Image 1 (cartoon, rainbow over the protein chains, first blue to last red):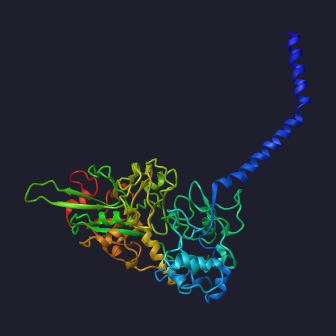
Image 2 (image 1 turned 120 degrees about the horizontal axis):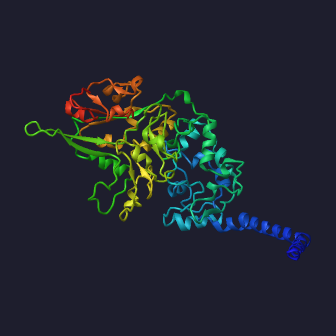
Image 3 (image 1 turned 90 degrees about the vertical axis):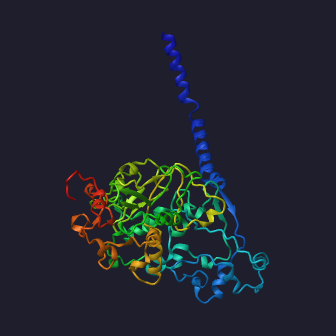
Length: 220
Length: 267
């Protein structure tokens, strides 16, 4: 019996002395690898990179038009918002090539001449169950475009559209930041981001279940 | 966002259905299905499995000729208020998928939130809720006919009448655009109301004395919304569900059929 005990003691002594450093070393490697996979490789795999059909230059257009954003993104008479302009609006100026840019030439050739609508990728497309209206925010709420959309009007290029391969939604909805921090409204637009502002501004906080915003305010 | 909430008085949207005018034609059901993207199956012969937000029931007084009489009862969701929003379905929902909104009095149903436990269907005394046993399948090209203002439902969730809430959203959108804070009575009407050829259905704000629904039934808000009009009644009034759908009839047996009365008991 005694010899057996001694043997086990000897073995355990050996364990604690020698291989401590390699264990920490492997832990750090594993930890680093999981971080790289989780924050670097997985998001790359999860989101496919798509480019807009035409590399649209907002800055050039804002300089040319008189009415700022509303020149192209306007309200219709029934209060609905036009969103991305259709081909007809573009053709008011671009019936022929009027500039020197290659992208414009491509636009006229591929879309204006055959009168085909441009399949723009919408960064802000929300799921089917979400209801959003610009009128209460922009007209009643007196919000500026840039408050939610950022300084998109100053951009020279259309940025890459990242599409979630599983859900098919744009990465702008979930947010760029993997930890879930969004400093500006245009970095993320999930349900919590809507309700955060609605609670602050006391918008229709009439829910019986949650004592917060009613569901049908932003859902349909 | 600075929204002037002070202008908004609490609304209580409700419906009045005149059963003496209803012919049971079913136009309200058809209009509702088209408006709200209600799904259907290839074989719709078993009506117990079919989905309908608005359903027309037929009842008779059970008497032989010449006293035989028939009455049709269109039944949407009653949007029960109960006491302080404690409607039967809302109080049992474990997912907060259904909710009572104090600002409009409408019971909402969020399909993406619902996980299909069907407690609400058990709790609802009016059978107003339907479970989706199958994913909706639309025949070729019919998807293009769907209403973009109403989200479609998937298999495994419960759905019900929303009083065409998307029409309220549209009306409010226009009001915001025109810098108004209130909408007119005719700006927000449900699909069934507008489809009824007999004009039996009236819709509006029960709290607003200018609206027809208020004038028709004269709801007494201090007594759980009980109608002051003696010809007006609500289904299963004595359960205390405080529904917002009122029925009108001049026929005594119809009014009695609206609740479970014992023999010789006055309503």
